[in-house]
Amino acid sequence: MTDLTLEGVSKLYEETAALREVDLSVADGEFFTLVGPSGCGKTTTLRTIAGFEEPTSGSVRFDGEEMTGVPPEDRDVGVVFQNYALFPHMTVAENVGYGLRFRDPPAGTSRKERVSELLELVDLAGMGERQPSQLSGGQQQRVSLARALAPEPSLLLLDEPMSALDARLRETLRRQVKRIQSELEITTVYVTHDQAEALAISDRVAVMHAGNVEQVGTPKEIYRRPATRFVAEFVGDNNVFEGEVLERSGDEIRVRISSSEFVLPDSSGVGDAGTGLESGDRLTFCIRPEALTPTAETNRFPVTVETSEFLGESVRVHGRWNDTPIVLRLEEPPATEELTVGFAPNGAHVVEFDVDFDAEFE
Ligand code: ATP
Image (cartoon, rainbow, N blue to C red; front, side, top):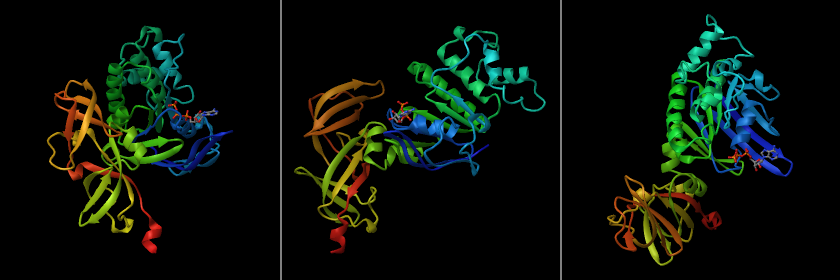
């Protein structure tokens, strides 16, 4: 088992800075996910960990040992890519056995036994003699996983392994991957652009944006307490508001947005006296759709409904309040085009604030 550290890792491709001083640490046995939009640097991070790319600067360490200059085959990592990359002319068993080309099976186990063990692990027992073309996409991806796990690597790296599969299969495979990972307790770095998948599968998540890590946290922290506006908007539906602080008193902050006033709790992310937040400062806060309800008694405002989507267990409503897009999660489709909704002060979370520090020291 292995822990993994990236310190100040940058990667430049001529004009492009694919990674900008990325710091990450992944604990032994952890399921850690890199999530972010296309081009944010997820794959480059994974390839740098695997050794397919060398960082322009910074350091990658496994269990404290510097990996710079160590070729991929000597890093003890198993990698699964998006396109299954199976050899079409080899059987399933031969494909899995190929994973053992650099390394003998664990002591006391024959190559053949190890291959059947792995096929069983990925729920493909008895399929060893098939050709990859005789398997579904999900099954082929499980063969890739078995092949990557065959030499018992200390680190498993998965680059969008499910993106070529349909939604239903993705969910099944996701559960299987998670089960196998926790059974083997193997340190895993998983790349996806799908934030829902990231929240569902991971112990911790790093949200990336333009070569930077915006936030690292448990799925719950990332969802409930996004550190930046980018994270708030990227992870799940969110309502983002910008306003001006009118007053901060006791444990409340009063905020103005156009001609309306809202009350936020002072514990919503800027509570420390040290922040120096005061009248006139700008503030960005977000509210999850489920916290914005027609029955809330405080912080009410009108919403013009634009579209409604029936999701089965709830209805997602898109609308607008002045220029601000609003998304709601309701039990029933709205009966009218104009609604009034509100939120309890503690349903809001402050993501960014612009404190005028100069004013504080005048
Ligand atoms: P996606 O989800 O689309 O795969 P990503 O988050 O994995 O995106 P990367 O593939 O890591 O992003 O790319 C990060 C940035 O680096 C992008 O702007 C990309 O165009 C650039 N890049 C990646 N590889 C190279 C390369 N070999 N040469 C030049 N630029 C590259």
